[in-house]
Image 1: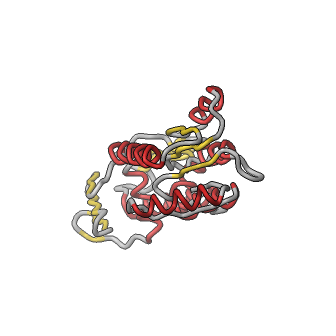
Image 2: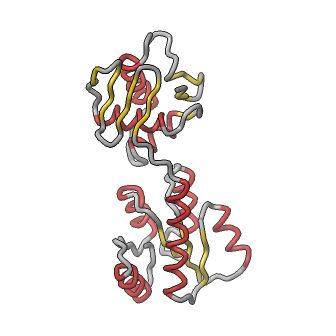
Length: 221
């Protein structure tokens, strides 16, 4: 929760914790943005009027860098243009102050239900002669268990969950390494090369981890 009013922040935190949620709080925009990126919460409750960095700016920064966290905006502004701006910037819901705690909790629950419905939890996956067990975090090829580093496994998992989708290198860096990781395109290239060597029938002519020239990569099961 990113809210600069101490009374509102305390009241909301107490009620959300009573409902069973773990709550992280920030009173400034930059602090909240850092928490969102580092801790990757399930949802952000975001005030618009914040010191130095507005809620709209936070929305814009998160969405621009593909940090995909549902957002409910709280605002004293009830003008239609402000609601439209918040939703256009990627917020999932918009609540005007003053509001009831019960309504906010109902909206939080609704947004999280939608998120859960659309998330695809993959437990196992097979392509070619490769078997992936996401629960056990193991990868086998032709029945032989392979040694993948944690980051190689995370990259493989990201590819598997986005089949036949062209993804640029910056997108992959943000999603797998994190928004605050200062890597380069070469980082991605090196890791894709390792996956090809371990998982492709012919690493020099890849069938599954395909280069999208000038953009990035595409995983073809």
